[in-house]
Image (cartoon, one colour):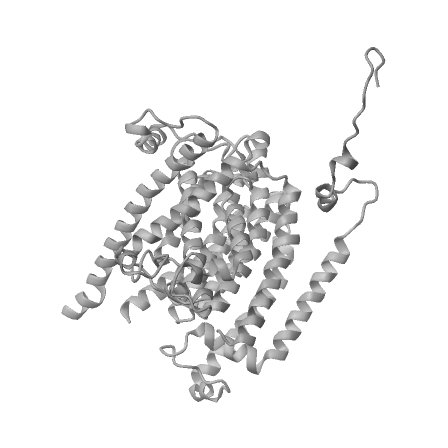
Length: 347
Length: 204
């Protein structure tokens, strides 16, 4: 009985507690990411953004949360009720479940699995189902068009994301996310004879792939300028037209959780995860989670700036970029990286 | 082992139940969604046996790509459910025949491994110790050294299939305007803008 407790019950309790802690922190973080998104967007357009609820509008996201929760959910008469309600649930659950394998600092990970990067890739490729199911179950034209666009878009950009991940994995030699970060202790900078610094991270050695990954991440999470599934000027709100109150909030939550995940993934793959930018004692003394958060927020700042600056792509341009530019480029980079690693013997 | 057994029966039960729902659901879209649930539970079963790479590839390839296209097509079909139901009995004999063949094959495979357990030892590739070699690396070892030519041939077959699909569906329409981005970018004020001095009261 004692061994039963120590094998199953206690690790179970620890795991549940860790997951809850991560989820609560993540949700609060997402609330402020949403606020930051709106504030940055406003600042670019010389507006103030949300500034009424709390000091500087800091509690705006929580006010929005209450508003969504207390509204009446409306289900269209012609909708397929079960699938209609399942869709936002799928979207949010999948987006949150990917966080189980993300290492926030050295050893700060709930599930340190061998195939961590594949797990993230697999789950984020399933996120399209929330959108397709929502668009179809609404039984209406705009949502359906939005869902079809989204399905084609996400499948297209997943291909190039996959190849970008392969190039990083070639340099690392492991599918474990912690190993991927640790492999960036030494890289291009140290091979040049410099001390360990931010020049070792993959963003420099694989710079074209860094750009491709960033743009594909925008497309994969339906962020502007690739927000065609919910293009408000042509499709009203795309697949979310028929949604209101809590289900709508869940779609938004899922979207922002996916955006935060892409920021974290960019940090892990290209920006050295929790590693400090320069290897000196005072920076090493700062906890890894701080570096991780700072880098993720930097990537998110770029996400928000792109949203504010860049006009929406036309659909055929989007497909052209994905299939005719990113796919050949990333495919070529896989081959080139493999050759370079083989010839120099660095891997 | 207790927890593993519980999860095995959980995944297996959901997989079988949703496989049944795939063929009994009235709406084809629901069928595809249940099919996705079957794939998901199959991935869970792979994970239980320690084949984490195969489980993730099952998710990426079958659920992330194949089932999306499947759902895509089924959603856009204009299906008359009553007509669909009417043909069930007509095709039942063929369905039963195929089901029997698959069942017989399963019996042969499972029965063979139960009756002669030493057959498992005769496989040419020894299974590496999972503690020292991850199964991603182990699969790569076998696939890219012992079976590299078969791997290349499989790639060529897929390439031929892909080119075939493109050739069959590609049609060049002559009377439409296409966007040439390099041409647009190469435009200069000299070729694009004409400055006209217009005298008052004369027009262009």
